[in-house]
Image 1: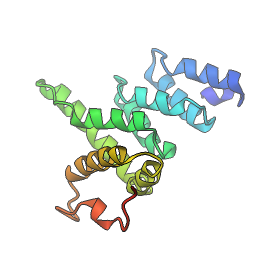
Image 2: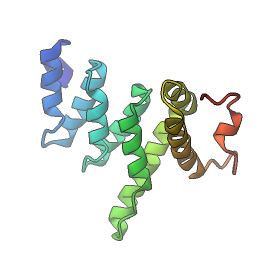
Image 3: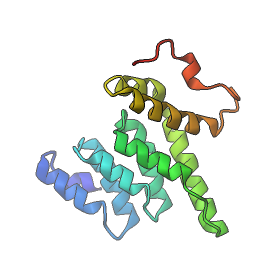
Image 4: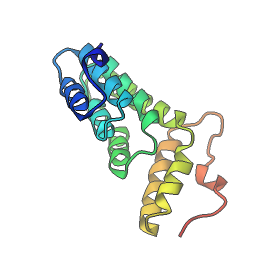
Length: 163
């Protein structure tokens, strides 16, 4: 829908970005799709922001888009971990919505080719403290549950530890 009205230049990206905060959720959803299609430089931040969208379908579009953005920036990873670690609301309906968001994020991360390898490659450019933070965060995500390999830490499969 939006793709018909935007070009592939910066002006088109700016126009698509303006739709990312539109009042109608279908338009926001299309804006996310368009920004990904146009490979907008700030698409990652727009997608991460859309994880907090009040509409479930827009949130779903944002979580499925995470795999297309890999490797994710450290800021995006920190935001995802913050969402995953957040306390569940007391209200049952809000708690169910939060649980769905968390499960969708975890599913999207698991669908990436290999978040472990992506983060190890990214962390090789950093320092040892950064490695430890990344590995710790990924262990927390992994410990949420992999029914096929209970209790197995993914980093035990890494042959060499950078640093």
